[in-house]
Length: 267
Length: 273
Image (cartoon, one colour):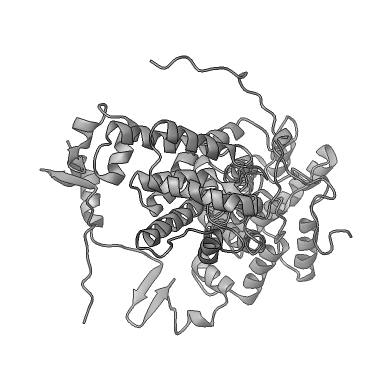
């Protein structure tokens, strides 16, 4: 028996009505029911329209403030982060800007502190809250948490930034608190930090604070994985674009002697 | 208002894919004119690549030459830009396929990789065409009379002759390989470049020349595909090694002092309205 093969794309996000004389041309384009180019464009901001894509509704004022803050917090991981270095290195080699951005974005999806890291910590927080609600983790303890969630010696969301406590994470958590935007997921994450930090000398990371807060705002781990990559793309693109005005040797190479060690390198 | 021609093309292409390469058929697939399970399964990977690129099954010597070109260029040094990009992605914990994609995307550079190779190919093709009109001696003399950039000459990091060119020539000349017009032109330019500018052809130039000449006679698309194919070993395996290290093991971490700020001084933003 043959499978029922679809020839259409089914989506709840974007609805197009065809022009009378051209079945390929869209007369109107509706985003979650709103006429995008007639009623939304020019009337709503980029963050509002981005929020609409994911949540299906235009944000309330507090939701917009929350959304803006989270995107802004992860807009630039700095010129020394692995993902920005990947993008910049591609640009230094003369790759076109799109290719350089692809290279950087591939790194930005990583498990260390990129999209996959956000997704993992959000799943952990969500799981802990779910178990806590149904009484399986009645006394939240470090050993209990580590036993379940520690992977390869790491607890998702915790660590250091260049060997130090992540100041940006502290700043974001504080701002969210000041604005009344700390929800139950972020509060749980900060509670977990009180368990983790004394034992491991590791603290909550910025991506984890953002991730827990994305949960509070109603976003899925997968969506947050992508959003943290996209928001960081702005800083990445700025660094990439800056490289095109510079020579290849105005960027670290490590080709001087003694910087690269492997079997046979001494000969 | 519609563009009738464009609209007709859309209708023509809707609901149907036309391709010369091949696809799935019942019980097998077809690739560049051969049955995948019955015939292509007996090819090596390079033979399959050349089947597509040449439009016929390659001779053993042709396959061996492509493999030699690839292997001679397999420098798995993470300091090379496209390889470093893959290594950064691996150190960031990206999936290996994303690391490979990062390397391939960045491989389209101008100072190395696909971009360098295609620039060399364009330069040699154009110069050969000019030689047909004006004569080789005149063209090469003009080339060195002013300040001319020679794609495929020199290397950013190492001075002197390219050791890969030397080794490749040894191998080819041992096998009595017959150089074609682009390659011979490259060698003629190289003689002048060494004498007048102490410049030497790099491997990309010779690689491009060989791909342009018989038995290959490749166009830019085929040159690009071979170049990406050639990058895979060198760029993917270092990424695998980094990927297998514990997550979080630093890769070339930079101190704050390793960056130099050249922008505006520290300031306070104006009050938001």
